[in-house]
Amino acid sequence: MPPHNPEAAAQAAHAHIFSQPSTEPYRNNPWALYRALDEYSQTRHLMNFKETKLRVAQQHLACMQPKPKTVVEFGTYVGCSAIAWAAILRDLHGPSADNDIHIYTFEVSESIAQVARDFIELAGLQEVVHVLVGPASESLRGLVEQGKITPGGVDMAFFDHWEKFYLSDLQLCEELALFHVGSKVIADNTDIPGAPDYLEYVRAGGKGGEGEVRYTTRSFETEHVVQGRPNIVEVTDVVAVRS
Image (cartoon, rainbow, N blue to C red; front, side, top):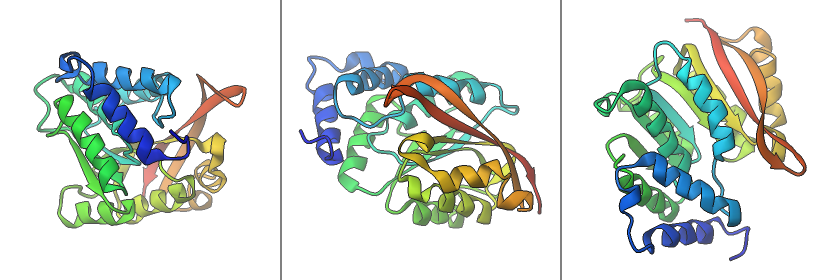
């Protein structure tokens, strides 16, 4: 399997899980499925938000008040991180909260999105995690037009797609007025392969500190090592929203 072929890697992960003698250990068990995919990714070329990095994000989500209910995720791939966000929100709100928590996640490939949907259904999260196919910007605008996401309604945005789109998609969230004071923006891969324009923007507080949305941000080293050094997760807080 060529490492540069994300479609083949997604299908291989799907086959790995669904060809097992029983999928019952993962049925309606998001954490078990997330960890199985994370373990698989350690020895196969499968893009995912590694558990060592997820723990950093989980700690920040657990400290939020009020507790987060709505997440938008830029970059579904096989749904591994979307499953984890749903599991975290369920843990924070209790098992009866499925009608109140929503993960909206964006994927450009229909065939890869179907892999994600199969995993999401296996984990029992099909009412919580919503996979939208197409350019993320179009999908996000559609959710706002449909009233599924309202102004100030996003508690966390997660960026894990093409790094060149991190900044423009963050600014789209600003344009659509999706953040509230206390919202978090979490970004992977800002160090490797890197998102320098995004980092410059959030470190400046957003539009040089004069924008309608103001940020503070911090880079967290994780136990996941890439190219001989700890991989970074960037955690950004919305500290002001001007109407």
